[in-house]
Length: 444
Image (cartoon, rainbow, N blue to C red; front, side, top):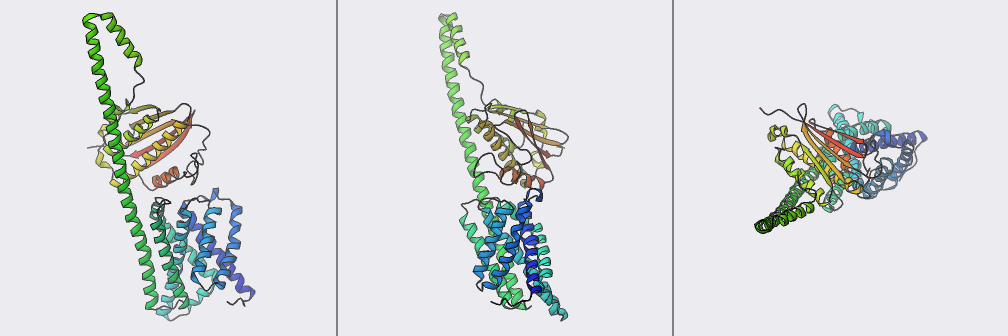
């Protein structure tokens, strides 16, 4: 451990480390979380100054790579929590991803510099000794990698929940391989050779394998989830059939009684009929007929399922579906687009049912219609308390209490990534109104 450097060298190290924290860790984290700098408290950025000093100290103080990983990873996690205000266990995964991205950027930078030196027999590798210059380039490379990779990475990470221990272990294993690779290259003084290329291939292969396994895991999880939902559909349908069968049985019995009265006492028959009419409650499941106008089966099924759940909560349900959407060809939507639409509608209905159930009025309204080559889903619900339209799509914002707050944030990220989708949120009187628009083509 050698601290015998002049002041200029320490200044170079400090600013190089600070640039890496600002341009690498912070901006990569912002990209990962799709965070707006306007809502980040600027005063909290000052914490990156001691982080830069701790990073320099750990580099010189710890010969053990594991300790270096622990210190840097802990600092990145604090940054995600304190500066970017991320929440729950995903902080850990995002911190690992940030570390891996910066490590990849560092290796790519050194590989290019070493390759240039090797081919042209130059001394450009001296750039690596300049902390400010090298870390600036590494930060830029980190941002580029994050920009390219974040759309898919974040999509997968947001689907990981707290129980995915095997996924966390896989991320830790990848982190260890990446760190070991960087440490080996550091010991070899970043000298370009076949060993450097081999280490680089091993590291890239490890990262690629991790996300291939994660992708496959999430696909399997999605299939299981859809199977469970199908079971719920079937259960709900079976319950409705039982209810209707019971109702038909009662009606048959009532008709037999009325028939008996008519033969002997018509006034008594009228009296009995009046008593039956008084017992008739508000009609339930009247919206089923409206949903039959929806030609896309999977959309009809998920709305049917969600509204059945709303009925179980005794909500006042009003549904209006325009008949002309029967003309919409179910094949105009790609499978991935349809999958996203189902996820979005499911989340919208879950939020609407929860909010209306918490309100005094307990009312849920659904309007589905076609306008200017767009299929429009309009969901309005009563709610309790106050809602901030400017904050509802912010990561972590929730009115449901601990454990919630990712729904609308995820939805907005998804909608922005799909050209045919757009959405809007409004509050009119005591109704929260959600509108989802889907661009469609006319059926030929």
